[in-house]
Amino acid sequence: MILADKIISLRKKAGWSQEELAAQLNVTRQSVSKWEGAQSVPDMDKVVQMSRLFGVTTDFLLKDELETEEYGEISSVPPLRRVSMPEAATYLDLRKAAAPKMALATFLCIISPSPLIMLAAMSEISSLGISENAAAGIGLCVLLILVSIGVALFLSCSSAVRNYAFLDNEPFETEYGVTGMVKERKQTFSGTYTRLNITGTMLCILSVVPLFAACCIDAADIVYVAAVCILLVIAGIGCIALVYGGTVHAAMDRLLEEGDYARSRKSHRSIKGAISAVYWLLVTAIFMLYTFGPFGNMQPQYSWFIWAIAGVLYGAVMVVVNLIQQSKK
Image (cartoon, rainbow, N blue to C red):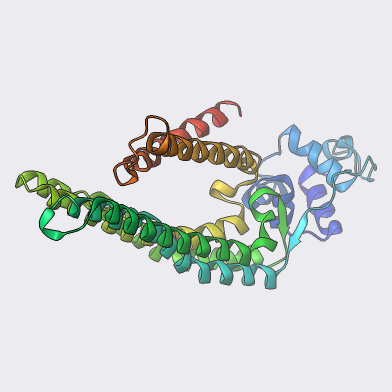
């Protein structure tokens, strides 16, 4: 009996589909199909994995003359958590319902400095009768209210799927039919996802047009500030499209263990999370020190640029982290 026939026999004896065996070995279903069709041969690492999964020796798998199963040590690795069809459908529905909330929360956080910036500029125009302290106080209150609403929405969405947190960090297997259902939904959503990405990206790029226009006409300071506020609003609208599409698409990637949620990348997610937490805590400390420290300007309305710079640098930091992780593979 050749290796291909042995894989088929042992897989069926275990009650697994090709997709389920592929998930156990962290390969594609097409790879398993080729092994069983004798179109290709698994490498030695996969042979060892299969011997442990099926509880047979590697000799039995590799030697065609051995027809009787030779039992080896059964893998001591605990069985993977299984995701049922109702669980998968519920999770996708929850993430789809959360997508507009996540998008709105992101928008509110992006535009939150706008009132503070605009009021600070208006306070410098004596005819408007707005004092600098009043502008700072009102602007900070509005900023905190908008950010608080955004954070509340984020926490609400996170709480709704707390029982599915294992999808982000742990390998799992899906019951029969789940993968097909998710792939069908992903295919249906692919056109919308592409359009949302294009729209969001274009709006983020075009958001700087008002600022450039103000520069071209050599406008007054208040016009420059208004242009910055418009920039934040347009960029925020672009992020609504990006976050909405990304939230729905990421939910399907989690269930399929594809993209950023592939098993090979899950071990790195906790590292990225720790780096992100330290990074933003450091940015917050810099903002507080620059604004309220011993030599601070005591004017938070003029310190907002720290967050803009931090956002750009964060993307660069994550690129470096990804490159380092890839070099270690």
